[in-house]
Length: 157
Image (cartoon, rainbow, N blue to C red; front, top):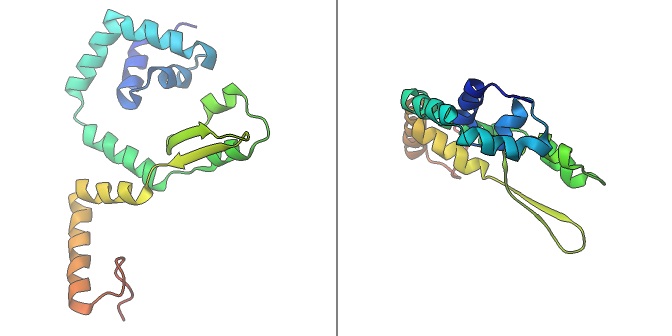
């Protein structure tokens, strides 16, 4: 299957994962690594990626999107893989594992899966968003004035 090089470059700039990009654009999972290697070695694709990186004024938007996926994203597909009796390679390659930080087999045939810390992702989102920082600063002020029983702000009545 011949993938559109320009489209590959655009999707790659967002994912930074050539195999995932290839699969998203319709390549068979078993061919994704080969396609990734071929396209990332292509001078035209390299040039397109460099150009897109230079023009990318939405990097902060991409970062916020990624952090939002970590903070609010579903782990249903990952959990389904853990609890499935048999899992095919294709199921793993097609599953949304964006929130998975670590995956390993453990002795006895089990699987251990760790996820990114949602709290840290939320904290980073607050740091990056001026509007959220203002809300957070206002909440800190109210907590100082009215007192707070816990770190989340407690109930103010």
